[in-house]
Length: 243
Figure 1 (cartoon, rainbow, N blue to C red):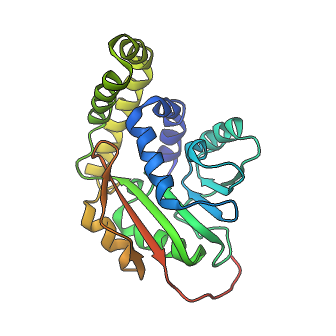
Figure 2 (figure 1 turned 90 degrees about the vertical axis):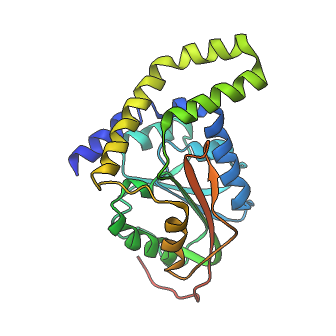
């Protein structure tokens, strides 16, 4: 929908301010710890946004970044000129062969869909993942409040950096933080209207297990408790077809 495209393009004008937010940094470090990356793997970043995952990955990883926002991908290419990018909607068949990826990550993407679209997207994730591949999924949850993330950032910054450094950092974050909070209010309203779907921990896990993906461990509360993270293994047999 056009309103969706405009919203996300505007959103990504300010998105990279999150790289300075401690809980956001912790989120990506936790995701990468689950990916078990090595130089021989092929990784799909599904809904890559501006490519912030790559700031936390080891070098020389074969990363494919897919997103439907031109603004986001332009920013990604500015930060990572050699990045491989695809402009494509996750609600359409992915432009990849079956069994193509060793790792798939989707961070804070699926919640932007109505719940009845999750099944198709998950089936596509399964299709393009290799047998025994790792799939890491994180999404904002039903408790989501953006202000809790910023409060947690201040608390951790005070502990790690001290008062003066925290005051300086926070003052420089005021305007982009206000913009991000405004955007997140719109996200919350879209969830209330059924355009988005914030799920609880058990719902997210069950949606993937329904597609015969094996859950690894319990759902983790991350991002200052505002998101759920699950890890799955694809156990389907190896079949080959073309996209």
